[in-house]
Length: 160
Image (cartoon, rainbow, N blue to C red; front, side, top):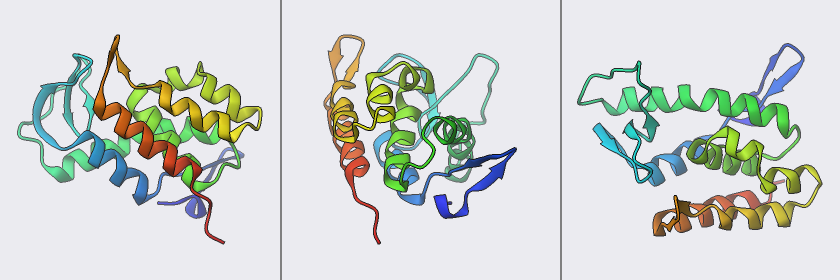
C-alpha cells in the first residue's frame, strides 16, 4: 500500500503505510509466535501486538496471521496520521506510523514532535524522535536504534 493508492474516506484522503514501514516495524518488533511480555511489561504476540484483556489468539500464531494483525493494528494509526498531518510525504508518514505503532497514537497526539511538525519545523520534529528511548525510566538500546531508523526515514527526501 502507498500514499499513491490512498483512499477517499468521507472527504478525507487516507494515506497508507508502505511496505518499507511494515518491514521496519517487523524488523524492530520481531516475530513472536507465542505470547510474551514486552519491555514495558505488556502481554504481546506477533509483530508487537499488545494483547487486550478480551483477546485470545491461537498459539503458535502463524506469520500470516501476525502480518494480518499488524495491518489491522496500523489502520487506526493511518487514519490518525492522515487526519492530523495531511500532505506529509510517504517517508514521513511511514516513520510516524512506525513511531505511533510503538508508543501509541495518544502519546504522539500530545507530543512536541506533533507540535513541531504542525508548526512546519520538520528538523525540530525529527530531533524529537531521539527523546523517545525510555521504557519507564530505563533507556533501552533497542529504542535508541529504532528511533534513529525512524528519524532517518522521516528525513529521507521523496524521490522525484
